[in-house]
Image 1 (tube, rainbow, N blue to C red):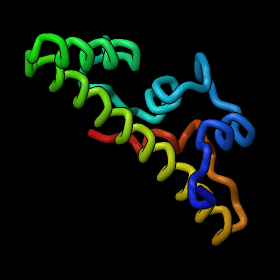
Image 2: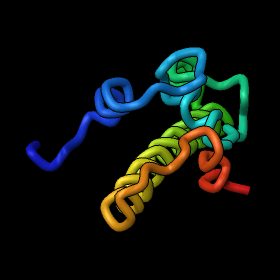
Image 3: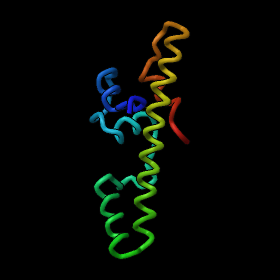
Length: 108
């Protein structure tokens, strides 16, 4: 467990961002990430999974998996953004401008 990092804590403690809150969806949206189903949520995903178990309708499972894949991709985007910023700072001694450089990390 020593290899795991709580990205939420790191972001919350180290950065000031122009976001509604320091939740994964808010930060990743600021970095340009778009969830494939913008109406999805963790609660909705758990419901879809439960419905799939109860009704065996594959669409519920697919929707849940899609949401969780997007969560993983959003988490990686934030991790990469922080790692690149740290690397630039180590190499150059200059901090990147978070506001200007956030869009560089957005997925198309």
